[in-house]
Image 1 (tube, rainbow, N blue to C red):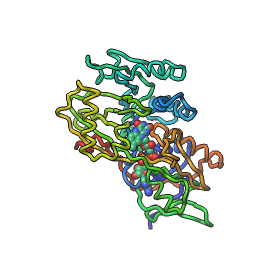
Image 2 (cartoon, helix red, strand yellow):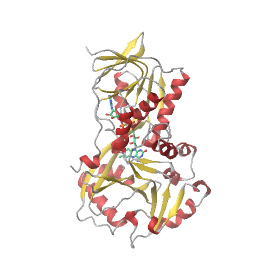
Image 3 (cartoon, rainbow, N blue to C red):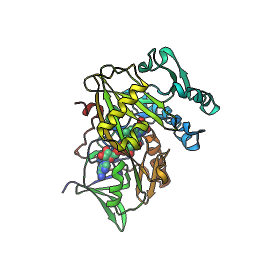
Amino acid sequence: MPQALSTDILIVGGGIAGLWLNARLRRLGYATLLVEKERLGGGQSVRSQGIIHGGTKYALSGALTGSSEAIADMPRRWREALAGSGELDLRGVRRLSDAHYLWSPGTLAGNLTGFFASKAMRGRVDQVKGSELPPALQDAKFKGKVYRLAELVLDVPSLIARLAELSGDGLLAGERIEPLRENGELVGLAVDGREIRARRVVLSAGQGNAGLLDALGIEQPKQQLRPLHMVLVKAPTLKPLYAHCLGGGTKPRITVTTHPAADGQWVWYLGGDLAEADGVARDEAAQIAFARRELAELLPWVDLSAAEWRTLRVDRAEPAQSGLVRPDNAFLSEQGNLLVGWPTKLALAPDFAERVIAALERAAIHPGSHADMPALPRPAVAAAPWQELFA
Ligand code: FAD
């Protein structure tokens, strides 16, 4: 029987939500332990595009709403953390781009000019031209308009690695999770048979939350999954591009981010509308053929004759919402000693942690004193898909 442990806060799931929370709580002096069943970041987090949204994309559907304002502060908070002066010290995390761009192909430009010049958008977007354009768009054949958003793009694997460092001895590789109850109250979890007592248990296991809630016999909150079929393309001719290419609707036609492959070439990671419903219905070959046509139409000057293509299916996990509406805030539900939630976006991990900390403060749970953690089996950090899929 492995040694029983005790801690203030026991976290299940080591994606961005659990790792950010773990690091924040430890900085505030709480004893914490985070349990991960596979690899740190290996769920949605390392498969994400790494954009630290400020909500501008959502403003495309109309005026900025209250909920999209809630995300507006995220780029500032992340920038401060990256500079070492914020709520966490994320110095050393690789920043792929200091800005994300909105790019409207020729035909659409007229409608958007007025919108971007509107009061709601002032200070959030600036039009760029010539040598200020993203390198991949600097071509004589390029037509259309490009706007620079004050949103950055991060290399998520380096972010996960840094957060794992900040977790110190507070990480445990563990798979089988059962509730530990006393007088009907949750007092911790048994992880692979090891009893771990805690004053609060936080489930931040992404898609895994549904199974964990089942195991605890808890019906709410319900989870929704939003399937995506992403495309990756690697070629020696690619130049960096971080942009939403606008279509006619409220969602970007394509969202392109650029990531380093193991051999030093760039990989374009394509999401947006291309990866949603119709894209999910296509098989891999049809999805690649569709992406080829989109790039040939939008960026005809880019030579893709030597390109290698892959696709990646992944589900986004979120709290259930009517009509599969996309939530704009981190979500947290409290039930006695159990907290469960989804950040809903990588960018909103600070908001998720803030909600947990506020719940602890409301319940007057302050850092306690606990015995030092013994050496524990430690989960590994996940590899990035743009490295693994082209290996
Ligand atoms: P996850 O990253 O899924 O982590 C959950 C962890 O819990 C995993 O490591 C898993 O192994 C572990 N786990 C599961 N079950 C158990 C269990 N029973 N016991 C122990 N551990 C368990 N957001 C943005 O802000 N910007 C973007 O550019 C962006 N792009 C995206 C692109 C794609 C293709 C996808 C899919 C998502 C994107 N997102 C983006 C959303 C973002 O990735 C997610 O909201 C965020 O990563 C969720 O983090 P998480 O920690 O909740 O979940």
